[in-house]
Image (cartoon, rainbow, N blue to C red):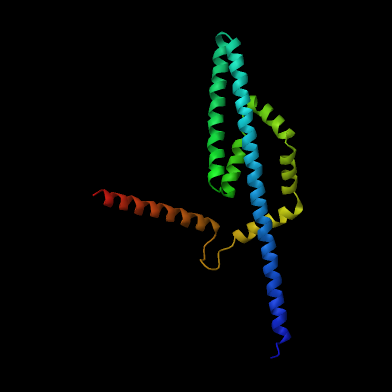
Length: 192
């Protein structure tokens, strides 16, 4: 049975497009994982810097008197709040996969580190050669292209469902709420 050259050409073009899509998806996934790794490492450095700041403040409080002691105690309380914040965020990162919006929010939080912690944090970041390597890799042209392609694709409506990425997030959240309403109703029914 002879096969037309036209079909072979269409199949080859289709396979080439599929391969290109797969490569972009792999680059995007790799970028996503590297970005998570960067933010998690930064969080861990922020937590280490905060703990060191707390220890330093405890030593200063032991030697301080009067108004200095009050100011140092306030700084120490602020540092402890940041320590709890870092712990919570790190735990969430380890337990569940966070989306790109959440990662961006965490990066914004990291940019607000108080000055007393910032010095130690910056020192830890500068000493982390693996982190610098990952950041350099993320800044490469291939990742920028892959990310742009993914964002462009995410900006379009899904062919199957007809909804865009934001509508999908809203639909997923509504589904989550609906499931919990059902679970709560079942729980109430079981109690009777």
